[in-house]
Length: 312
View 1 (spheres, rainbow, N blue to C red):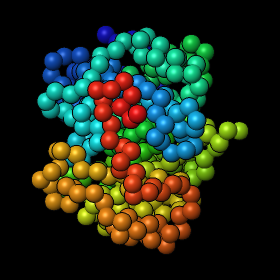
View 2 (cartoon, rainbow, N blue to C red):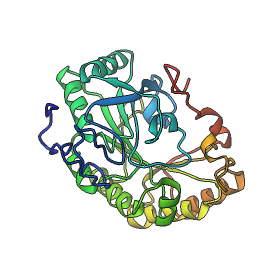
View 3 (cartoon, helix red, strand yellow):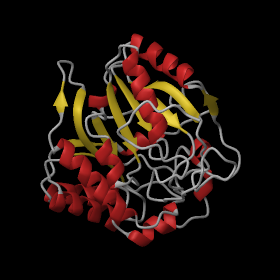
């Protein structure tokens, strides 16, 4: 049985209700839920990632832990080699001590932040990691890098623990979430979870003397080819329900993986006019804070998880 390092969040792994799936399986048994994840920690990579937003990466990058499997199954996921829940994936089982050793080494090399990528189904293990990092005397900025399919109640319990929320806000079209990501009720859960992040952090972000983020919320949105109406709806929701002062990372980095070669729209790159259409709405809504990407960005976000550093 896993030791509990944090008493603010009840251990749900015996009847898992960590994410909106509410599979209620015993993750210490052979019967696993939607995410096909047990109680042990498995990762696709632990590396200093310099491909994030400038206030997150800085010169040395962020120490990112890429958890394996996912509570969503996006057809177009660029990390499909580690995130899919069927078939073989690239993953390494690692002990808590070994994982924190790797984090410690990257912190000693200059990383100031620790990011948890796809943590929604790993919240219990994530809290163990945070506690062990702190026990060793380190105080990095902890970043919750999520697909947005989280429970509001879980995010509430992370208040005071997570410094920076970095959620995707993928869909306001419920059927599109089902079609492209096998994810029911995505707008309902994501809007509530990100709303809680906004309640905790507000629209402003705090930066240190080097211009690196120490606290705040940055909402990411990947513009998908053929689905600009969905992107515009996401931006409108944020402006009308949170604030147009929120920091937005509006991404054009989509590229078609081999898995979508036969999918309409998804089997091609984003067209400049599609991204411009979303950017025009971004400006009309009064957004001023955040980041946009060059159309060539897709060339830089094609990870190979067989390499020690997937993005370099």
